[in-house]
Length: 395
Image (tube, rainbow, N blue to C red; front, side, top):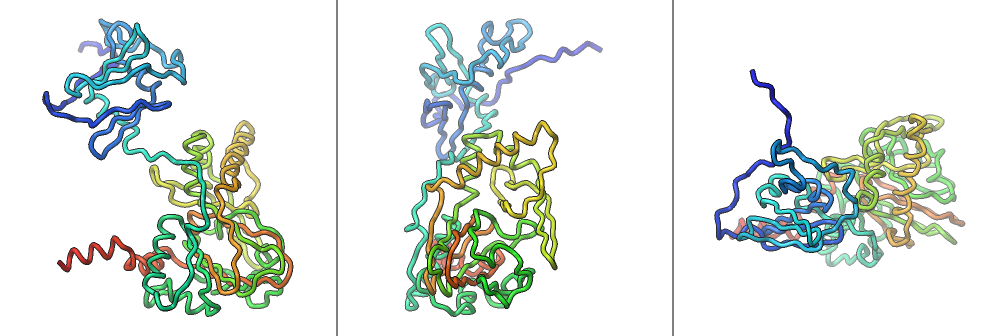
């Protein structure tokens, strides 16, 4: 049997016939190249293109077909002088300098499109006006449609002047036969310093202290998907709420610091709630993903157990945590809301973090938890897309 020598081969893939236009155009961007094919985009870092240059003699050995350039020799900030599609858009020419160009088969790039349809995460810059609405009892369908759109697009909605009937508000977001999520606090929380109605009220929510950004119930396996906070009485001073879309912030972290993102999505931590009559532990990463999607954020500084990492990892993890926090605590990332009597905020507990500033006076908010599936089942029928689909079927 002949010995087989492992070599790097740049295989030929099927390519469009001559005259067939494959790509609309190519864009030279700051640190990557973008190919656009109808509705698809494909992004390639310049260092990746230079590393995979197929030029015989300069990048590939003419006899063995092996790569002769080590990627360690390539600058991470390399940038071409010019890029263009040639040969009826079957080839991509990348000019690095007057003496050196790379000529790629478009079919090769298609087969190795690692950045396909990538959504670039922008630095958060939120506006409270985007998530607020004023309740009008004569426009109930519009009210629910607007709640759906804000929850879907931003992860939260603030409704002004809805009133003090908590049970009526609960009905707004529950389909027939569904119920709210009861927790170790009870069915409805009365968040007030003189609380006598809830179990296990030996925690920060029942004090007048400031509470920094966090998600609720990260210490259980299946936290409630949505939370509603209804204002019964506002504080004399202070007591405003801040909310931030931690899922969007996580995607921005991935954009600017992939190493920090990788640590926070792969390294498990212990969330430990320990009260007089209740205790629960959950082990998992702060950012839970499903492929490239953010599935759930668990973030609670006051229920984090001591980190128990290897010595060489500990400071690096703290730095990753702080990098994420720098985005979350940026004022441009936060919706700052003062709830008045009769107002409420409803938010996605898997995406949003919420906080409260310290206050004085007998502030009273009610807290209610919902399941994702129940809220979406109730609200989706009011979405524009759903209505259009129904109208199409009826026609």
